[in-house]
Image (cartoon, rainbow, N blue to C red; front, side, top):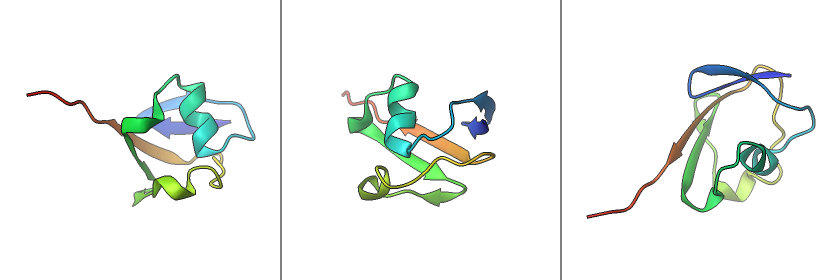
Length: 66
């Protein structure tokens, strides 16, 4: 199935949730903010939110430093 991640069209397996999408992408979920179809997706909903064909995600990884 095809989705868009940060403006890039990608093919991913069907049946993913947002949590398993993050794992599939090899990202550490502890410092991420995710927007799905232009709506901020609260972390509490990641486990129950299915990734659907043609969804669009913006994934931001926070970096600390000083």
